[in-house]
Amino acid sequence: MTTFLLSVHVLAAIVAIGPVTVAASMFPAAARRAVPAPASVPGTGESAGAGEGMSMGESLGAGEGLATVRVLHRVCRVYAGVGLAVPLFGFATARSMGVLGSPWLITSMVLTAVAAGVLGLLILPSQESVLDTLAGAGPGQPAVERATTARLAMLTGVFNLLWATVTVLMIVRPGSTTGA
Image (cartoon, rainbow, N blue to C red):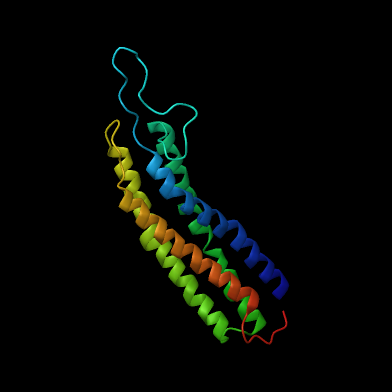
């Protein structure tokens, strides 16, 4: 049973946490590029926006950029919910292994709770705020302040670092004598 629980725990971590870390990491840059479409250039009938060969620093069209940011936020939100299975199966695995009192596991549980708090209380609400700002921005205006996306990128980095630390603790298990 322990092998089954451990397998499901690891698969849940890969399937749930992986997409959140990637989508949350992509969100700030995508939000910076999601500037509403500028007005057309007088006399030409063409948009003054970036062409097909735009670089990473240039803006996307209003619809495309906002749609991208919405999808990234949806991925974060949905997989955050799916991610609740990770500590659930982790706790069941630890109980079946008899390691619930191990310091490496307690540390991992605390870091997991902190990561969940950062995601649920800081990252997701900040993403929603950015989406609201983008939806209300006027044509050709930078919709999101760089400080906002920089703070969001920093929070995402903290979230990713917490999960990386938990992953290392789960593999190394300092002081573990389980042999599993």
